[in-house]
Length: 321
Length: 287
Image (cartoon, rainbow over all chains, first blue to last red; front, side, top):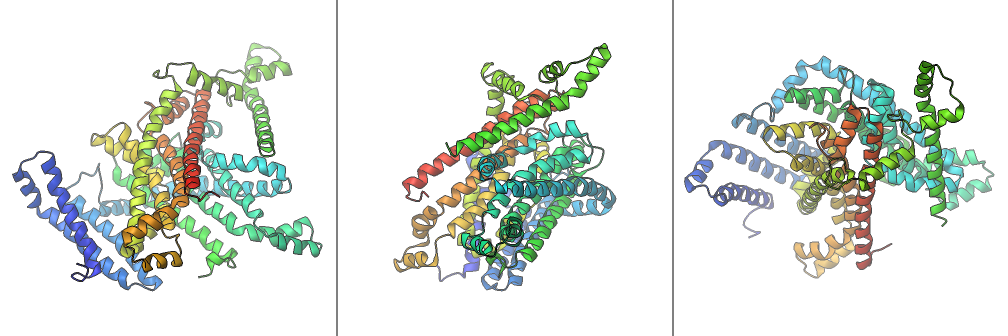
C-alpha cells in the first residue's frame, strides 16, 4: 500500500474520500431518498470546492516534504492561509451565502478599502488610546511592584499565589465597573487594560527576579556590589526572558480588554463599539473588517514586543538559532 | 502555616485597602446628601453611611459577601435570582465548549505531530491566532448563529471551544514531541508501529503538558462563556448578571456576580489540578 502512492498524495486522498463519504452517509442516515443523495453528488459546486481543496492540500504536502529552509516553510504556511481564503471565497460565491451570515473575503477587503478613515479613527480610539496606554501603565506598575516587594520574601510568598489566582480569573468582568467609574471614553478602557495586564506581568517578573543563580549572586557579593547594583547589573537582565514572556501574554490581553470594555459603553467610535453596533445592523462585512484590523494590530503588537525581546535577550538560548 | 500566613496577611491588607477605598469613593455622595438636607456629618456617621449604601460607587466587602450569600443560599436553586442558577447556565456552556475545544485540540495536535504538511501549514497559524483578540468576534458568532436559528447553549459553547482550542493545540503539539530521540529510537528498534509509539510513548509522556494546557483552557473557556452571554442581552448566566447590573447601576449585583465567576473559575481550575495530581501520581510522574 505504501509503495503504491507517494506520501504527499495519500493523506489528501483519504481526506477526500472521508468528506465524500460524509456527504453520502449523512443524508442517508437522515432518511433522505437516494435520488436526493444523487442530486447532492451531481452538484458541480461541491466538486469544484472539493477539487480545489484536495489539489491545494496535495500541493502543500508535496512542498512540505521538500521544504527545508525557513523561507520554504514560510511559503507552505502562506499557501495554507491563501487556500483557506480561496475556499472561503469559492464557497460564499458558489453557494451565494447571504452577506448577513458570511461575507466573502473580497467583500470584506472592499469594505476595508472604502472605510479606511473610519477604521483609522476606531483604531486610534481603541488601540492607541485604550490598549496601548493601559498596557504601558499596567506593565510599568507591575514591574515596579515586583521590584518593590522583591526585598520582602514574606510579601512575595503572600502575593505570588494571589497573583497566580487572579491571573486565572475572568478579569474582563470588571469592565462594567470601571466603565462606571471612569466614564465612557478611553480612560475606562485603559483602566480595564491596566488591571488585565498587571497580574501576568507581576507574576512573571517576580519569578524572573528569582532566576539568577546563587553562584552569580555570590559573585556579585564578593565584588561588594550593593543591592541596587546587583539588581540592575545581574538580576534584572537575568529576569528579562521571564518579563518578556509576561509582556507578550499581556499584548493579547490588552487588546481583548480594550475591545470588550467598549461593549459596556463607549463614545461613538472604537473597534468594540463598531463591532457591537454593526452586528446589531447586520453589517457583517464591517464587523469582519474590524476583526481583520484587530488581528493585524494584535499580531503586529506581539511581533514588536517579540522583536524587542530578541534585541534585549540576545544572550538567551531560546534566541540563538 | 509558613505558606498560609503570608497569603492571609496580603488578603488582610487588600480588604483593609478596600474598606478605605469604599469610604473614600462613596463619601462625596453622602456629603452631597447631607448638604442638601442641611445637615453636618460627623466622621463616624460618614463611615457608617458609606459602608451601607444601596447603590454605592464601590460596595464594601461585607455587602458583596452578604449579596453573594443571599444569591447562593438564600434562594431556591431554580429561582432567577439565585446565583447558583446563573452560574450553572454559564458553567454548562463552559464545560460543553471546553470538552469540544480540548477534544478537537488534541486531535489536531495528533495530526500536527504525525503529518509534516499539517505541521508546517497549521502550526504557524495556530500560534499566530493566539495574538488575535478572538473575543472580539464573540458578538458576531452569537448574532449570526441566532439568525440561522441556533440559540441557547450552543453559540456560547462554540466561543468557549474556540478559546480553549488553541492553548490545547500548542501545548499538546509540544507534549507529543517531548519524548527525546533516544526513547523514539528505542521504540524503533522494537519495530513499534506509529500507533504503538503514540499510545505507549507519546501519549503518556504528554500528560504534564496536557494538564498544564487544560488549566489554561478551562479558564479561557469560562471567559468565553461569560463574554458570550453579553451580546444577546441579559437573559441568564453570570455574564448577563454583569450586564443587567451595569444597565441598572446595581453595583452590588455586579460585584457579587464577579465574585461568583471568580469562585467558579477557581473551582474549575482546582478540579483540573486535582485530576492532574491524582493522574500524575498514579503514572509515577508527580514532582
